[in-house]
Image (cartoon, rainbow, N blue to C red):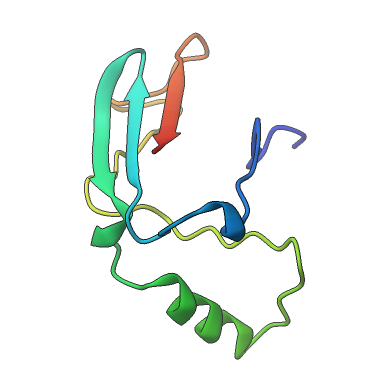
Length: 96
């Protein structure tokens, strides 16, 4: 499981973002655009997510909250569908 949920090559901290609620996200698979959206379209804002989570668990510095993505999510499966991800595929997610 060494490759499960990897983060990188770098992580941006909150003080490095002007507005986390206005970031363009896009995902390509083998160079083909599969998702193009903006964090302003997310259902819940980050402070709301933190408040909800911290009501039930203790959050520590360095914890990562996986929020999901805004509209236009592209589901990738490993086998069995037309969107299946082959071992030779290149998937790129960009946050701008």
